[in-house]
Each structure stands twice: as structure tokens, then as C-alpha cells.
Length: 293
Image (cartoon, rainbow, N blue to C red):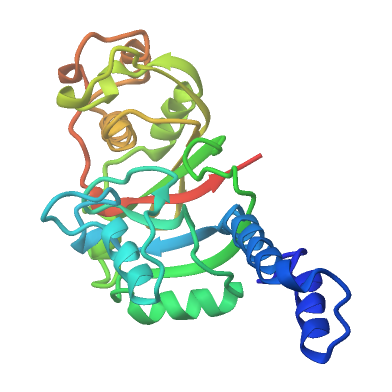
């Protein structure tokens, strides 16, 4: 990259070479030296480009997104691929996903050491990423963009396969329920209670329960398409295991073990995680989409 001051220095240098320079020959070398220093200083002030990535991954073999000492994470895999293409940069993700949780559209950003054509960057990274991780899209963003802090909502989807039999290729990505007694209409009716601002203290893993357990859910819907049952939820932030515990509670309602009033009582600030049903397995959960202004 050339800075604006370079052209004048080049002109003066060319003039000196062919005898056309009309300045002070005695001081030219010092003059040129300081002009070059100014140019270098100006170039060093240029910010490195910030790049946003949309990443899809199969979380089965990973201990989640977040980098962990001596443990296999998606963030570590992405950063290793960046180092392999000469970009030793830290990656910031839009949100943490737990061990075994998948992502269709995780968003991350990093500060690049050089300018990349987006499609070439995607190809370069995917050449070094493990088979369970793929960069789907890359784009240059404003230097102030922050994948986590700028996100206004995150959408998760949980998949349930309700049938006596299950296709082998579905098993790693859905919770398989074999019973025929589930009333998914009752579950869908109960899911609507989750919308709005509530105390989700009973929807959080005990060890990670923060002081403030109030969260606002923009959208929550449970629906069935044949043998596939899908729970979709959109919120700006979540508690640890909040979505998986919510699905466990909805399954309890759909099975008839609990009712809608019970779920409503949990949203009134039930004091402890023990008031909720079990946490469903991570295999059916996907970080589906992250939305920005």
C-alpha cells in the first residue's frame, strides 16, 4: 500500500538522478531521509482490515466454541487455520456454544494482517479447517464492528425426531423420542409463555447461575412437520443451558407429565434449577442465526 506522501519523494529522487532537482543538494539526503520516516509513520497508523466470518460447524467432536486449555474447541480450529494462512489473529465469536452444540450461522471477527478478497479467504481457510467446520462467508466490516457486542439477537433451533424409527444420518442432529403419546399442540401452546421478559432462573445450570437471571425472549415457537418437531427461539442473550432446559420443560408438557400452568410458574421466578425438567442432549441444538442492526 502506498501512502500519499510517497509520490513527492519519488519525484524529488527522480529529479536528483537526472540532474533536474533544484533544491539544496547538501541537505537533500537528510530531507529525503526525514520524508521517508514520515511516510513510514503514516503507513503504520493505518488500521488493519477487520473481517467478519459466518461459520457453520458440527459440534459433535468439539467441546464448544470457546477456546479451552488442552481441549478441542471450534475457536481453536479457526485460529489454527488463520495461522496456517499467515493470519496469527485472535477470533471473537458472537456467542459461546456448549459441547456438542452445532451452528448453522455462528458469526466471528478478526483483524487481518493483509487485505483479502473474501472468496479467496473462504477457500484458504476451508483448506485448513477440519471436516466438521466450514467458513460459509467472509466480508470486510467497519473497524468498530464487534461480533458479540453488536449482536441484537441470536436464534437457536432444537430438533426432535418423534418416531419409532430414526434415519442414521438424523441421529447425531436431533433428539430421538420413540413414544406416540406426545401432545405437541399442548407443547406449542406452552411455548408461547416463554415470549417476553421473565426470570429464567429455573432454566439455568446451577453452577453458572448469574445474579441477574431475567432475560427477554422475542420469539418462541414449537411446531411439527411430520415426524420432525422444531423449537425456535430468538433472544438477545441466554443463560447457560437455557434453551435445552426450556425444551426439556416443553417435552414434559407435551408428554402430559406437567401442564402449562406449571411452566408459567417457573417463569415467575422459581428459585432453583431443580424445579425444571431435565436438560435435553446437546445433539439437537443449533445456533441458527445472529442478527445485527
